[in-house]
Amino acid sequence: MPAKIVHLIGQMVRGGAERQLLHLAEGLHRRGWPQAVVSFRLGGAWRDRWEKVGVPVYEVPQCAFSPWRLWQLSRILRRERPKVI
Image (cartoon, rainbow, N blue to C red):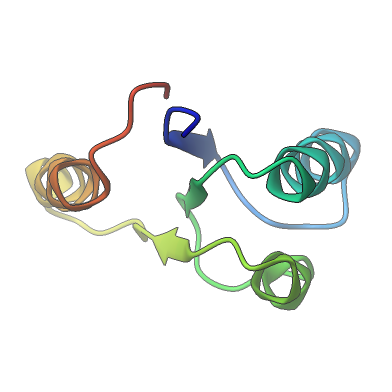
């Protein structure tokens, strides 16, 4: 079984980096690589497409208390147990 991958992306708007990451994830998914993605903004145009591919999407939104974001990210990573980030 291939190693689990967690992708980190700033947002899920319809931009070039987001599109390339989605294409990469689709190809890896077809080859059996388990994955998840963490976005640091809520929502976005690509969220539904990620879910159609079968890749779980986690969101760690901005807040006034920035250590909270780090705590949220660490919880996700402990849950997903990736080998590659």
